[in-house]
Length: 114
Length: 113
Image 1 (cartoon, rainbow over the protein chains, first blue to last red):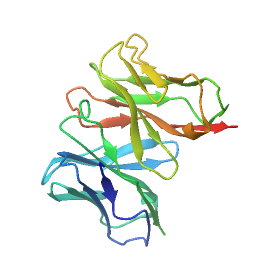
Image 2: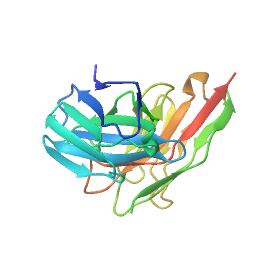
Image 3: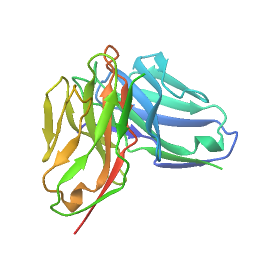
């Protein structure tokens, strides 16, 4: 069965902490994505990666960075967490194009910054 | 830029009622269109898709037709069940950058007995 696994379902962090959200896929997909989901705003793309060590900014990259050292793993980093980064974070992966290969999503990580 | 507009929720229906969730889009070129569903406590799953004008996507009794003239991709189901209660997201893929999905804000559907 196809799997995108996010390391944590729930996280609580303090303001100013460095936070790592991990995502692993087992489908040998080239593309991986990080979205955040907020009520009334839908899903917004933070960053995506189309190959190992390659990354591209999405619509809301400020305050975030990413790392993709291996094809199956894509990490989202909050360099200094702030309360406005409290949100649901969703990781996804897909093949060469979403048109021909559906995007698979992880279960999500609900992050609370206090 | 590209955008997707969905009807506001929540939508509350009785079991066996007819469902329509409206979705319109703004995009250059010829985007592909998708409906994703998010059941409580789970990630998003692809429900159906359409890649060109007049295509009809269908799955699990749900249907949506890609209408280029009205830039719409409305989701319909003839008879909803309690198990259809979820959040539904309309999305598009920008032509030429096939990987990046743009989502609508989502519509919560609640089906009661």
